[in-house]
Length: 288
Image 1 (cartoon, helix red, strand yellow):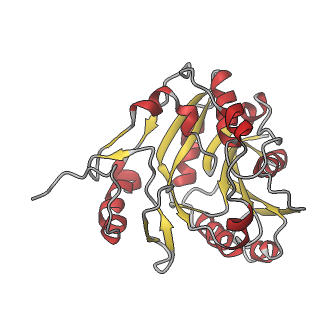
Image 2 (image 1 turned 90 degrees about the vertical axis):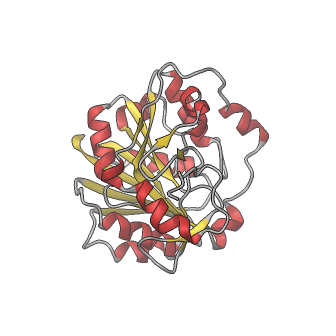
């Protein structure tokens, strides 16, 4: 395996073709170019045509499989096809900022034994995309609290139980660490907890779970068949299997270079002014 590149595993499903097109468009705009894209399609009718439109812009391979609503299986298939030793997992509704893949490459190079989780919009505070002005997106990540545009603080619980907050929509890990814990457990079906279970096993094996806010993404609002079929509550036994209460053996690192990614600045200047009910975790200092 090539140790210098990244394999980006993008999972998609019926009803997400438009979201996938924008996801791939953002990947084509990355300022770091040492990567391939693997699109794993859980049964859609139109995603292959979307991917064909990017063959001249991306090193891209497309794989369709019959739908079974098992994101763990899609991610494992993507990992098995990867040519590079660094894996980045993206849900097809994520829109990465231009520096994100370069940040992931740097993180894995500096700490190859850590898994790195990016900042991802996950709260119901809706604003318009920075790149697609008419597109509503989620941008506020409830795992982090910005004191102002330059300074962010981490919740105490994240520093004690990082595996509970290690969500799979936007993260990176080396292939060696991925396979050392057996990848995702494919007995988890539907949406939820397969990622917490995966992070639990990483933490138990001694892998540090880091968070990189410079690898940030807008989260497109879910629509269509994906909303109807995938966004279902996980079974109680899946939640129980994924749960871990013991502190991680290693304290996570939270990485944020404010001048580099401009996340805090963009939250303050672009996203926040569009929202009437400001997120409670935004604690911007008064300038008056």
